[in-house]
View (cartoon, each protein chain N blue to C red):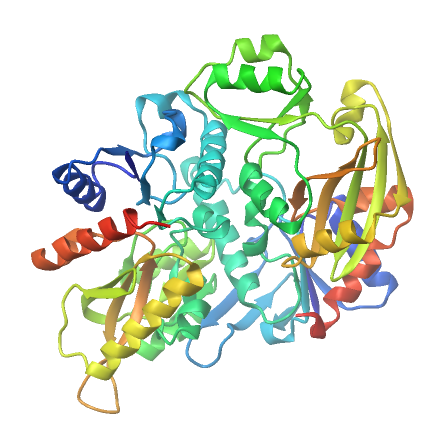
Length: 274
Length: 309
């Protein structure tokens, strides 16, 4: 049996489950498997698509209080580290409890791996925020630390709304990068790209090398990096800068032939022998 | 300049401030019971350097963050940010999270000693996971079971001669207590995992590690959880003690990523040591008050020593 920790809504979970079934294997998708005890000895591999993020509502979860869900999350982390079968994207406790980090929280590690993070700021001073945005002609992106929302600050009305937010809490601003949003995913040692506009080959190599090293540093085998373009004064090619890092990936962002190869790579990791 | 981040009424925060003042060290307080109200922050992460730059302004002071030479942080329990009537109630949790994550992001990246950064202490949020780390350090841990299966819990109870305690598997602060057969018989299978441990008799020993130094305190009590001895109608006596060198060395390994750690051990009547957890935010002031052990002084020395990190 293969345990896929996540939900049916996750394309990676769904695709890996389908591929396992096609190979005559038994997949089991669950977002909180500590609630559905099964013999560990039957587990042949585990894929963690969802880290210790809040457990989605389910009949069992509805009955649980927030405290009970914390207990389940703590138990699940320990279970993953006690298993002897392959566990793909098992994380350390610090990543388990804060997998979805803001760019500023990833900033130093991205820098160390030559992944050129976009600039970020945390402030509750409107003047300081305006000063930060002045480097991009008054534009910035407001990205709360506790959600994935992004609010462009382009117009005066948007800035005034942001100023009202700052009356109560510090806001996190991120350098605006030019479209398109580009995604580079690491699976084991292979890097897949969502699309590649005119990115210099040296830039591609830099990102791929950085991602591989980052995977080793974080001790995970699946990562997705979002990149954007930053005008470069050095040559005609824009430089890429990191905008977001995730420990899970969105399969739908990649070309269909790549999706199949990505699923095959994950299957190989799941079925690796120790 | 040392930053102290915490609630001013907190016993341990008070002790750290006292020790800083006694040793004539300059510090600024970020009152986390009020923060972010009354403070102005401007922290920038960019390509100008490997660490963030900017400033923090308090009620009557402003410092550049590159002036910060050490940080002691103790987050109050629960949602610690001040409640603002101007913020709708459904956004209060967001206010807390935004303030918390922002401050933690800064502290994580400061190049000075920080007691403590979040990352090395996160294992404490999963006791059974931390148990694996403790084992790797060379210390014994009691036999344990994390389960949602009521029958498995009963089997464990019998296998431990019915001497079993139940505790939170997560970081939730709850008293440890002995379980009875009746407790386990009403366990509803498949709902919430329970974390059970074989009861270990003997004296509790709290070891505080502070930047390579070890302070051991014996906690003599008949209570199952000496921290709550009053609730059990008993008392606890604390006294300085020594632990064998190999135990001290293992504690230093366990607390290695933390400038200060509180490590809970028990010494059995036959001299064995068992380890229960590594606390990244220890209330060391309580132990210091009763024993006079100079834990706070060691901490402020560590905070002042840029060479440590």
